Length: 192
Image (cartoon, rainbow, N blue to C red):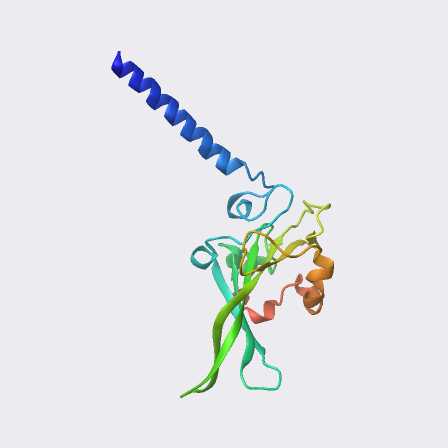
């Protein structure tokens, strides 16, 4: 009798664990699948992926020159979701669901034996873009021109401070409009 009771409790526990696990995977309700579903929710809200430094591929680094002094004032380190580089090299386009994460760092500039050197010092935040080839979120002002666009302060990778991509993000990308709003010339791995 005790064995049957123990088995019932164990079975009920396994069912509960299964339900919680399934709910955890399905609760986001994203219109995307795979890794992108962990970045975008059902309303088009975005978050910085927690594992991008270990699972994404590095595209390249940009150094923003300091005004009136040697070195750089910012460094931008850009990562792209797994498989995006191979896909891009096939046809010169980012596949639907591609995620780009740009880390923006304040720099430290010092004299070294090789000369004046700037390195990443303090993370300011992240700029995130998610490719949307089908216009999934027409009511969300963070989505348009084939992408989801969002800035996140370093203090909160789960909540964007952007409110409207056209006002907050797009102007910096206008010179790259012909390459789908991405400065692809700065990313050697995309060369075909």
